[in-house]
Image 1 (tube, rainbow, N blue to C red):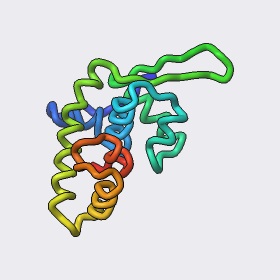
Image 2 (tube, helix red, strand yellow; image 1 turned 60 degrees about the vertical axis):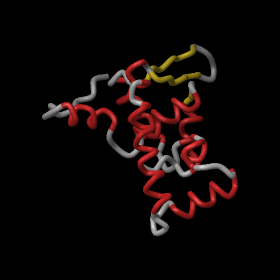
Image 3 (cartoon, rainbow, N blue to C red; image 1 turned 120 degrees about the horizontal axis):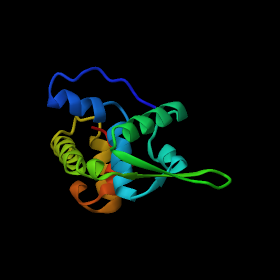
Image 4 (cartoon, rainbow, N blue to C red; image 1 turned 90 degrees about the horizontal axis):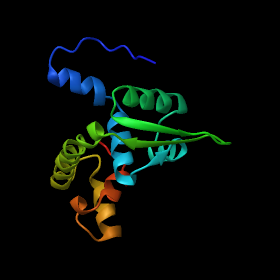
Length: 142
């Protein structure tokens, strides 16, 4: 299935056509953290996503060669998603965005994520930057 995208006007436009949107970064990062994820695991990991939107977003990421989809011929059907080499190259940029938000949250008590940040620190007893699980627990806001 070919997904039509408007002609990008520059490299940045091209990149954001592939990774922009509400869920793509979160899906890519979830697969990175776990290595391999099945559809149901992704649905649980990405809060607020509908089955239709998850399927559409996975198809777009696969079409853009950022994730790969492996189908096992068995009953019930089993499908696994992993990052491609191209998808793995995005991780340092997502990590940078994550750190940027963590710094904003840590320095601004009025920030909407500040209480979650403080709660995570109290429970885990660690600095926010040290564990990926904390970012996952606040649904990867960025």
